Length: 116
Image 1: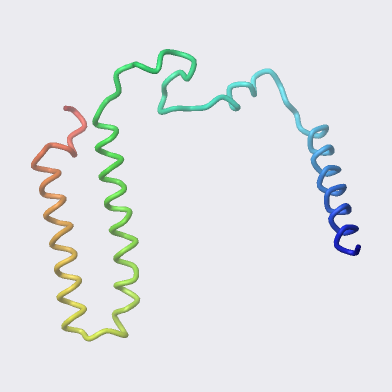
Image 2 (image 1 turned 180 degrees about the horizontal axis):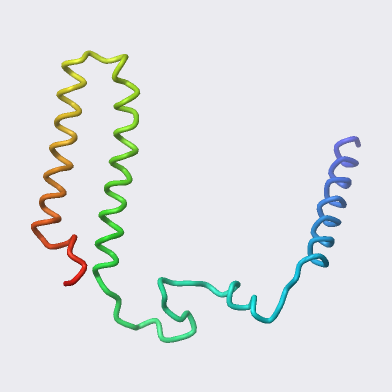
């Protein structure tokens, strides 16, 4: 019974707060654009079959690769005190070399040039 009373009170308070915020906000006709979806500069109401630059996709993939790289490097830094120095340095060196080879491959394939 106590749980039911608390639930009802929570629902009433949350609805009251939403009602107050609805009356307090200053909405105008210009805010309609803020509510529409934004898809990489494309108009969402136009044709969905417009040509899309593949370079945007490649930049996104490169960003995700380096984002995962950072997520893997941070634990390596914190584990420096706990691990054996030789094993830790070999692992770090191998990881950095792999990333540099990936960067070289992207550079060699002209993925980093925006003017293509």
